[in-house]
Amino acid sequence: MAILPILSYPHPHLRKKAKPVEVFDASLAQLIEDLFETMYADGGVGLAATQTDIHWRVLTVDPMENNERQPFYLVNPEVIEREGTMLSPEGCLSVPGAYDKITRSQRIKVRAVDKHGKAFEIDESGYRAAIIQHEIDHLDGKLFIDYLSSMKRERVRKHIAELSQEKKA
Ligand code: NI
Image (cartoon, rainbow, N blue to C red; front, side, top):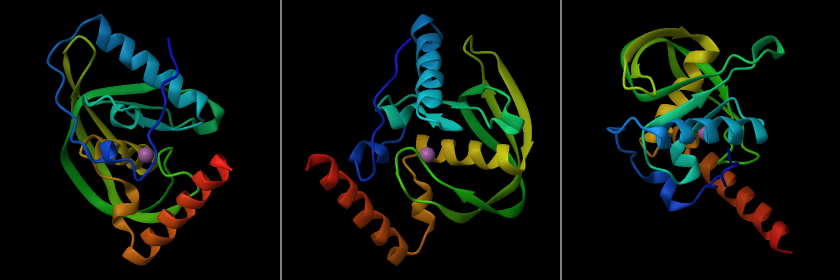
């Protein structure tokens, strides 16, 4: 297992569209384990492979509701049904220090495969549905701040630039 480095906005690789997984081998199983380890190490509730500069359609989630681990992962996830909308308060390991409310679908049905390539469907709503939508966006090169006004996004960009200046100093 390994903790992978996470790309920070505005790294251009966060804009890459990840490719569907076609080979279901030990390296896929390893990637899933590494994403879980990285996600837990950084205190995230979700992580997409894209954020670790690996551009395959794989994501891990653990909403950590009631302080209990409920890990699951999705390979090649696809939203096949959406219902309703909700305001979702979000942050992102790749956009440190930024938190805001954006609009997400309230309920989604997702088709995905497991690490052996076996297809399944899940129905999720609320917080869990928001995390899945956030992570699928990453696989498409999209960030939650893309939904904010350009003024708010500019503020986030400046804030992150200041943080990286402090790190260098
Ligand atoms: Ni994120």
